[in-house]
Image 1 (cartoon, rainbow, N blue to C red):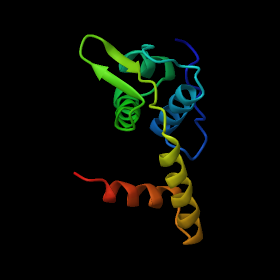
Image 2: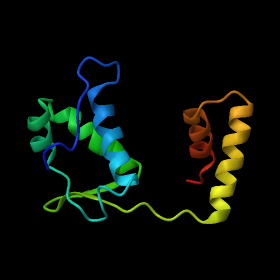
Image 3: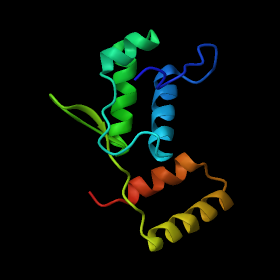
Amino acid sequence: MTGLVALDRGGSVPPFEQVRAQIAAQIQAGYLVDGERLPSVRGLADELGLAAGTVARAYQLLEESGLVHTARGAGTRVVRPAAVPPEVAEAAHALAVAARGAGLSADQAAAAVHEAWPA
């Protein structure tokens, strides 16, 4: 899967975040589809000239966000994001408006949702 990620080596964004963001964007845009297998951690690390731990961190963050699933023997595969019900989309929009009005960043608003999520 050559060309999956293009690194900006002189940029201020860490390589793991570049890998995570680019793969996430491709999943969300539909370029990477449900069930599609991503390159192995080692394979993508070799292709990009990165340490395997850097790519592993990106994959871990993608898994935590529900965009991929890794299973021993099956590799890392794209998971189609769940459709968001209209009432949840409306509530998210209301949260975004309120958070911006309060001067919060998207990360701070997401942290508030995470804290409110029942264990």
